Length: 370
Image 1 (tube, rainbow, N blue to C red):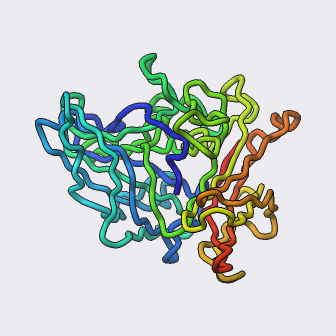
Image 2 (cartoon, helix red, strand yellow):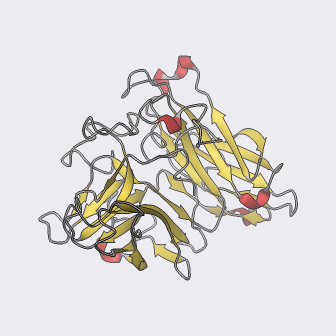
C-alpha cells in the first residue's frame, strides 16, 4: 500500500501488553483508506503483512508470533471485533541471533500460501485491524516487540516522533485519553480487567500488500522530530515528499493549530511497478465527508481496481507521468485559506492509463482531515 513511505522507527513496543501474553495491533481506518483489497466483495483481502520484529534476547530463546486480522466491531466503532478474528499466519519466527550482543531485529514480510479475506461485520464497519500476538515475556530482557512510530515523546530520551494535526485531539500520551480519535494502536490482554484498550498515540511500522496498485496520502511538514516528512525529503527517503504515517499523514496541521509553526501541505503518491516510465496518471480529489461506493473500474472502462471517490463531486487536479512506476501530486495550500479549512476532510485517488494495454489502473483512495 505504501504505509511506510517516508516513515522511520521511534521505538520498539508491545503497547500496554507489557509482560503478559497478548496482542498489539494497528487499525487501518476505513474512513482514511478505501478501495483496497477488493478482490472479494464485503471485506478486504490481504496478501502480505510487513513489520519489523525485535527480540530483546535473540540468543537465549527462539521466539515466534502470530498474525491475526480482525474486522471492526459495529457495536463499538473504531475497535476490533475480537470474536471474529481471521488467522493470517501462526508461528512466524522472530529475528535470529545478532552477530554481537543479544538484541536482534528483523524486517519480516509475512505471506501465507493464499491471500486472506476478512469479511466486514456489516457494510458500515470498514476498519481492518492487523494484530501481532505474543507469548508472555519479561520483554525488557527477553521477548518480542514490534518497532513502531510514536505520535509524541514519552520522555526526553525519545527524539523521533510524528506529532499529528488537530484531527487527533490532545492529550496523546495517556491510556485514559487514548481512543480511536487519536491513536491507531490497541492492546489486548485476555486476563486483564479491561482486556481491550486503545494504546496512546502510535502505530507499528508496518505495511500490507493487496492485489492492486499502491496509493497513499502524504503530509509534508517542517518537523525536526520527523524529518522524513520534510520537503525535500532527506537522504534515504522520497522521492515523493511527505509522510504516510497514521499521525500527520492522515491528519495534517495546515494552520499550526495543534503544533505552532506548522503549515503542512499534502500529497498523493501512486505506484505500480509494471507501468514503468511515462504512463499518464490522473490525480483526483473529493472534498466530501465520506468515500463513494466502491465501483469496479471495469464498469466505466477496461481496467483494474475500483473508483471510491464520489463521481459527481471529484475534481481532476493534474495529469502527471510515472517514473519507474511512481507518480505523485503535491497540493500546496495558500496561506490565506489555511485557518478557514481546519477540520475540512479531503479524499484523493489516482488512476493511471497503461499505455501498452490501454487499461485503467485505479489506486486505493486515501482520506485526510485538516
